[in-house]
Length: 353
Image (cartoon, one colour):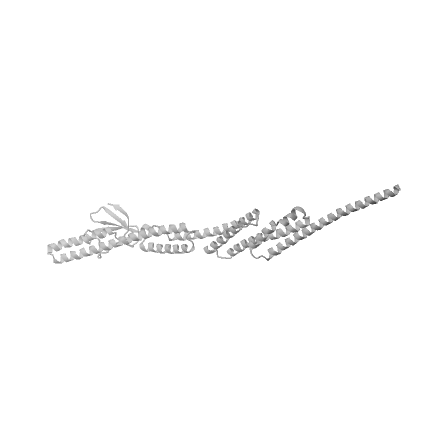
């Protein structure tokens, strides 16, 4: 009887244990089934994101999809609770692939801008376009919401190197135009002829037009220098033209006075004739048969007299000149001041006798 009881108890215990084990196994099986189902759903979600990302053709659309992917609460829950090492590995691989697309996008764009620039003649328009493209790309990178700070920094360094190269070429262009400007400058504008001044003005105005057509901002300093020089040269031309007008007026007055003197001499008596001859001699002491007063410098070149000498001649005052190197010195009779003039009659100095 006791053995029978023991047997029954043992059987009952076994049954109870079996029931407990079955229940535990059932719970674990059900739990694993739920985990597997959730992981499968997560995998399907990832595949959907990847498929959608690959189908998108616009960077902004891809950025939106990528942002939704890394923020997906369902996927985050899987990662935080039930994800296996293999599942995490697959998730990270797909995430890295999508992220790499953006790095490649900017790298390819930078390479494209650089290659396009290197294939040009690197004229101002080429440099300007490359600089604009690089700056635009830098703005796009700075506004990017996907890239890490390290990747943005790395791309920015490459961009900066490209911009430095372009800016160096731009400076060479500015230097070349500055040299061209300097080549148009006259060594001594104050003693230059009107023809040389006008030639320089024409060259400088043409250079102004060329630079302005390219960029008034970039060449602002050089354009300012050119404008100042043109103003100075134009003022000097006006001075020369004023002096020429005064000489012409003085010569005309002298011519009229000589004509009047000749007329008076022909109608006078013998004594008057002697007096007229004396006056005429004084007026023609310059040794000139015409009313244009000229001399010769040490190079044998003709030098025109200054206005002051024409005024003296118009008043019947004689005078003389002497060569002074490439200039001539002029002095009216009775004066202790000599005017040293260039070939055009411009006074470049004075002498006291």
